[in-house]
Image 1 (cartoon, rainbow, N blue to C red):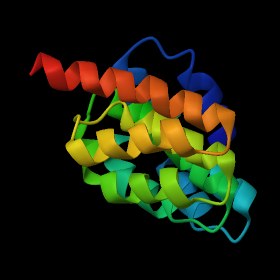
Image 2: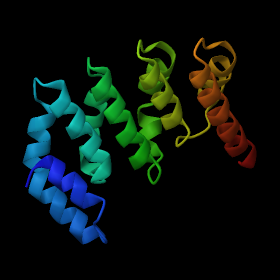
Image 3: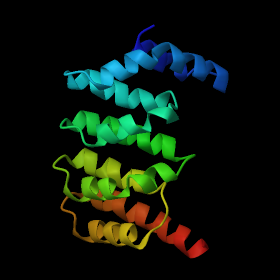
Length: 161
């Protein structure tokens, strides 16, 4: 079974056991793809981590967040966002890197995905400040809108504490 086939089946998997079987079947392929010289193969691997809910591969996601390819960084961010819905510690552990991506990445889509990932983490003052700044100062309208929306969510979380 290829990695792409496993990802397609993951969407149809009805229970955790079926997902575990898929993860077991593609574990080595995923590792190999994440280390590939081809950015497209790496992007598929980073995206598969989230789709297969492969929580054991979060260290690979960190590598994906630092990849030279925007496609790989974006795929890793999509997986991080997906996995962090149930495990906000993933965002909290990668917060400095997410801040850097949201603020400085040359690719606007990567910046927006980093902002969206921050919504699943804890509402820390530094993140709230960064989002407020991006919501007011970012040149790209979509980034301003995303930062404003996530800022609202985190402010609400903070006030509920």
